[in-house]
Amino acid sequence: MEKKKVLFIGRLPPPIHGAANANKRYITSKLLNDSFKIESVQINLPSNLDLVGKFGFKKLFWTAKSYLNLLKKLIFFNPDMIYFEIAPKGIAFFRDSIYVFICKLFNKKILFQFHAKGAKKFANTKIKKAYYKFTFRKTKATLLSNILYHDVQEFIPRENVYILPDTIKDEITEIFFHKINKKRERNNKTQLLFLSNMIESKGPIEVLKICSELKKQNIKFNCSFVGKFHDTSFEKKFLGKIKRYKLEKSCKYLGPKYGEEKEKILENTNYLIFPTKYPEETFGRVILEAFMYGVPVLSYNNGAIKEIISKNYLGFVSEKSKWKELAIELSKRLKVKENHKKVREHFNKFFASDVPEKGMLEIWQKETA
Image (tube, rainbow, N blue to C red; front, side):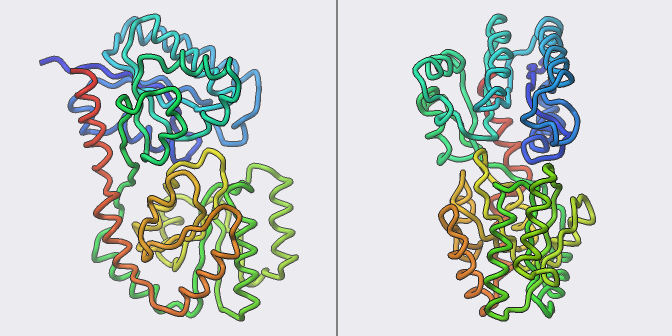
C-alpha cells in the first residue's frame, strides 16, 4: 500500500527555539516517516532570532521564494494533507494566510498546529474577525492544551480541534539521574536557574528581584542566567540591575548554552525560575527540560503553564507580575527537602518523547484516511 503524503509548512531551526525544534522532530520522526511520505516548506529565514519581528528585503525575498517552493510542492509532491504551523497574529499571520489560500486553491486538507497564541486579542475588529474566519474555514487544528482553545474558539469549532501536549526526548538514564540527584543534594548553596532567551518579557529582571529578596533573608544561593540577548539596550538594563541589587557575587550571566554545557547546568540546578509574561507563551518547553532532571519550577500563569505545573511537588505558579509570591514560596521551599525523584517520575509518565509522535501519527492517519 502506497504511503499517504503530508506536506509540512512552518518554522524549522535555525534559529533554535521550542517550536522549531518540535517541528523538526515531527518531520524527521522515524515513526511518522515509516507511515507517511513527508516533505517540508520552511517559512522562517534560517538565521538567528535577531531578525524576528523585523522587516527586511532578505526576509521578503525568502518569503517570496517559499511561496514558489510551496507551489512546486503542491504540483509535484501533491500531498494528501497539509500540516501547517501557523503564526496566530500580527504581520506573520497575514503572511501565513497567503500560504493557506494557495493550499486551498489546490483543494488541500489543512491541519493547523498552534505553537503560539494571540489570535483572539489580535482579531479585534469586524474585518479582522471575518478574515480569520475565512482563513480557518473548513480546516482543523491541534493545540498543546485545552486551556489554549479559547484563543481560537471564534474561528475553529471544538469538534475540529485535537489536543496534543508537547514533550521532549528523555536524554538521561535512571542510573545517571540517581547520581546527579545525590550530587545535587550536597550543594552548599541552592542553585537557581533562569533558562530561556534573554528577552524582558521572559522574566529575567523578575528573577533578579526574587534573588534580591532571598539576599535580604541571608539565604545562600547562586543563580545562573542562560540564554541569548537579542537587544543590547535590554542587556545593559539587565547587567545594570545586577549591580543595583548588589547581586554580582550570586547572580551570573553565562550566555547561551547548548548540548552538554546546558545539561551540566541542569544537573546542578535545584530550582528553575521562569516568570514569563511572554505574550505568545503556550507550553514552556524549558519546564519539561527541568522536569527531566527532577527540577521543580516556579513560574507565572501563562499559556498552559498552570496545567503543566499541576502538582505542588512540581513547583509553584503565581499570577503574572506576582514575583513576590514566587519569592515567598521559594524561601519556604528552601526549608524542606524537595522530592526530585517524584518530579522525574511525573516527567516520565506524562512527557515521554514518544507520546506526541504516537498521538500525531493517530491524528494524521485519521485525517488522511
